[in-house]
Image 1 (cartoon, helix red, strand yellow):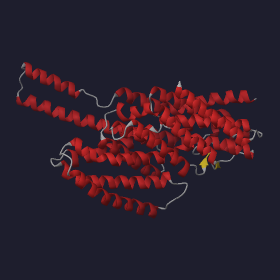
Image 2: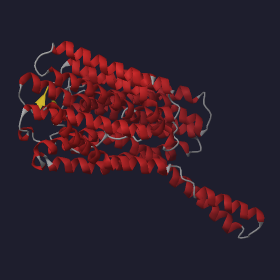
Image 3: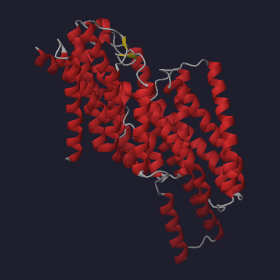
Image 4: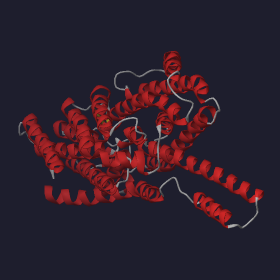
Amino acid sequence: TAKLGISAIFIALIGVTSFYLTGGASGSIFIISAAMIGGYMAINIGANDVANNIGPAVGSKVLTMGGALLIAAIFEASGALIAGGDVVSTISKGIINPDAIPTAKAFILAMMAALLAAALWINLATWVGAPVSTTHSIVGGVLGAGVATAGLMTVNWPVMGGIAAAWVISPVMGGVFAALFLVIIKFMVLYRRHKVKAAITWVPILVGIMATAFSVYLAIKGFKKIWTPNLIEIIALGIGAFVVAFFATKPLVKRASVKIGNTKKEVNALFKIPMIFAAALLSFAHGANDVANAVGPLAAIVSTVTTEGISATVGIPLWVMLIGGVGLSVGLILYGPKLVKTVGSEITKLNPSRAFSVALSAAITVIIASWLGLPVSSTHTAVGGVFGVGFLREFLGNRRVHMMGSFFHHETGKKTPIMQKINSRIASLEARKLVRRRYLYTICAAWIITVPVSAFLAGLLVFGLTYIAG
């Protein structure tokens, strides 16, 4: 009840502030209503989507829940306010043609319906513990609202086809890259006889790769409002980040190696500091990138009311950005822990090296997808990475158990009581699932129905709002 009360106060403050800013001018009721819905949407994005950035760090015990929430809240809001809010497509990536909307009022109601439908769906997904794509949620909302307002011909179906393809591409790419990096860490460091010596060689390289990935990720996704680098600048930035990170990390790893033992657990601890930076940088980029899902339609409504015309692109006013940035942090702090636990520890068990692999995979997948022009979801990418490392653990664990079973069968071939117990234990280990299937099925189902459910809700809301507005 306390959480609901704080959320209600935040949304009410938005309503009062927007009323003051509009001064009761003509059409202000639409701006005030949309601002409050935008605040509600921002809270839900913070509650659901931000978990992907800090969940692995919490699940691997690199950060406490409180520390992770604080870091994410600061960097999400900073990303939204510093680097977010570039010129945003009010039709959410060109899904519908604004010229097909008959009137400005119809457009305003459609955007309000899209925003509220997406927020309601994300709220429901958070309640059942499923991390979903907020981008896909608003895409579904805009799709349904557009169809309900102006018919099927208003939809840009090729764009929708690309978004549908991203449902599969995002988690697969995230899972493959995360598993690949974990294989490198395991076979080049953790499975070596001299683990500490191997770590001195490989940890600086891996941290350098992370620095390269995140510098390029921030350049192309996080700082697009204040700097748009060309290809040469991006390559130079990536190389420079690798060199600086490598030579900065090398002496630190050497110094730390003197104090740690030659065990997997202690060598794993070398990935803790890079994971903290990864959580902060992912949060910053997410705030800069996904805040538009909360305030893009709101900015469209503000522009349409004030100019009495429909525009395909608009700038986002500072007060609208504040709603998005602060709302993300409010939602994260109040409701984020549930999804943080799901992503960080309930899908599969994570340690620092596994969490590092997930974070690195998320950044690299987004970079490659941006270069290829694929509309991947950061949520699907990060959660796909968690599934990737989980299934790799399951595969490697089952392979070791199978080899052990083959050895015992070959060496004895006897059905003595002790061997029957051993074989029974081996059979139970072979059947062990290190990825909890319940979460796999729930999350995949939520991903599949996100766009259709958001679209259906938005269509219903268009008719309802149109009736209320007269």
